Amino acid sequence: MKRLAPLFVLMASVLWGSMGIITRYVAAIGFNTRQTAAVRITSAAVVLILFLLITDRSKLKIRKEDFKWFLGTGLGSLFINNLAYAATVQRASLSVAVVLLYTAPFFVMIMSVLFFKEKLTLQKIAALFLSFAGCILVVGLSGANVGDNVLITLLIGLSAGFGYSLYSIFGKVLMGRYESLTVTVYTFILASLASLVIAEPVSMVKIIAANAEKMPVTVIGSVITLALPYICYSAALKYIESSKASIIASFEVVAASLFGVFLYHEPLDLFNIVGIVCVVAALIILQLKPRSELEIS
Image (tube, rainbow, N blue to C red):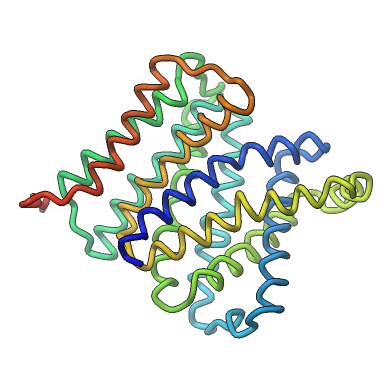
């Protein structure tokens, strides 16, 4: 399983990259930004709960002392990440929001060194900066703007990146105690409860009732692009360093770009292609086994 861990992270990143497909579908039904997030997260949570109730209820058992870690993955990571990212998109261009979101690997690397005593190597640093540069090139910042209040926008955007990074930290702790399904289901339960509070639930229910025929696709899409990648990523965290996992997950930007090209005929210029090459090169660097690894002290 340890050898397959990077592949599980890569699978998760591809599925996350396809999230835009179902997000566009859900938003087109008539949900606002917060409701779209709430619908996707809650749909995935309900399916996961039903699946475990039918297949293995023991996976729904957790220890009270571990609840704080689940609050970290559910509220601190998934909920805050979605909320801050949506707020950043409203205040700035999409490209700026994505770039700020992908500061996450920097936070993960710092916290992994501090809390998990992971080695900080030149190999990781090179892969980190190469993948981040690749993300910028893939997204493109030619039409970038950060709104009227630059500082507030940057802080909110960095909060999205920080929230995104917390799953790699809290999830790592929990995966030493539970299976990936248990970690994922409680993450989604807590995040869905918080999301529903701010999503104008009465209005949301009315939209759902008026578009009931579109809900099956919404639910299936949410499970495939949201729940399943978290299950894969959680499983991988048990066998791979958090810092490496977060860098590999940056392939999501490449996957999202390619989905856009093939499904929505979005343009792909030379800078985008160079960015894709950079991200792929970063993944290759992480998989290399140097004869002597220089550690940064």
